[in-house]
Image (cartoon, rainbow, N blue to C red):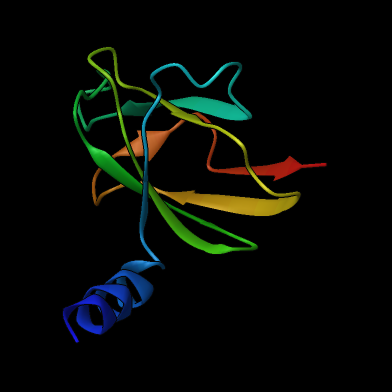
Length: 93
C-alpha cells in the first residue's frame, strides 16, 4: 500500500521539473536574469513553459540559467516580477 502512495505523489509532482546544470553536456538554451538594477540575479527560479509543460530552472551565481535535453518546440521564459531575461522566448528544432 505504501508503494501506491509514493507512486501517486510522484505522478502528481511530475509537472514540475527542476533542471540542474551539472554534468549535462551542452545546454539547449541559456540566458541571463537581470534584476531591476540591471545586475545579474543569482539563485532565482524561473518558470519555462514549453511543449511538455512547465520547467523550473534556477540561475547560477552569475545570473545565468541553462536548460538541457529539451523537446523540440517553442518555449517562453517567465522571470519573477520586476526582473527580465535576455532570452524571453526560444525555439528548439
